[in-house]
Image 1 (cartoon, rainbow, N blue to C red):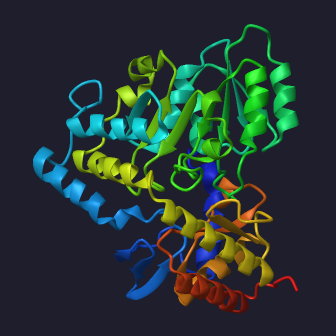
Image 2: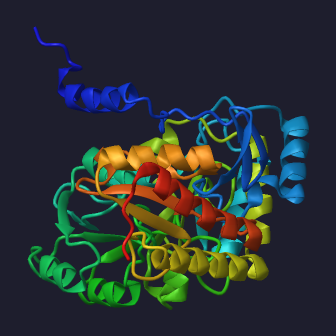
Image 3: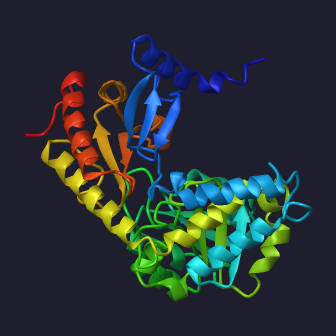
Length: 401
């Protein structure tokens, strides 16, 4: 009888090969101490964090920390129950109220993770005979939510408006349709042409969900996301997001104006059958969300820093995932997995942490993914650029002239 782990052997061999070469392990790095949203201690050395998704630097905000400490003292460490049983405390209701205000929507539903928010919506909203139409580069949580449900799944080419329109025209008349888009795609940091895609989806009579996990906080006038910036707020049926990026905590949510939205609390299994977030987490999240609405200066600084880092790395000869800085994610392309690991190790030695993207996440692409924070100073950004150049020389990475 075969070992059920045999199917993973190629991945095991690849990982062991990298480790045998004497390189650092990019997937088990331990942060010994977190000094700030942009600095940490690893193996006794201070490093600059350039890969945490802490876009707005809210993890150390004094008001956020104070709210969490107060809730911990007053409500305890956990809820020990699902939201539909004993797991809805005052803080959960306040967190959903903060979301409704932030997005100016009628309904908000908080999940224990962002992954579960997508899992819950995709698996519950479309059933047998319905269709979910999604971008080929959609996040794993979207695909997994689709796999949990009984709807037919149709993929269209990444960010291709014409292909979306073509796929929608092939769906049988009378079928229920949900089009799933993302504001910012997390692998290379490119944004969706939401204005055009939403128009095509609405013309086809489809409902629309937009995942704004990597856009909440710094896209749009109020930081609501790409859908706000694109001016399609009134045409989007669901917005899905996470607390683990700009909000700086953990958790997920869906907001909507649909009059029947509240029924999802009874049919979304990842909501019904999961323990709710601890009181301290929802208190921190609510405090953070309230501040993000007015974080105009932070948004402006993050955009300035992201554009400067993108421009400087490109001018230094690095190959990037996007032509311009479309978001706070700057993906640096590597020629192969070995070079990627060498460059990642060289950056750690230089005191810079970035994400080395696992090969299964981006088939055919080898990426070192940077994500900036609104708390990165101009001096830190200049240091990141200088250390990237030195790391490339150490790793033997050829740069474009």
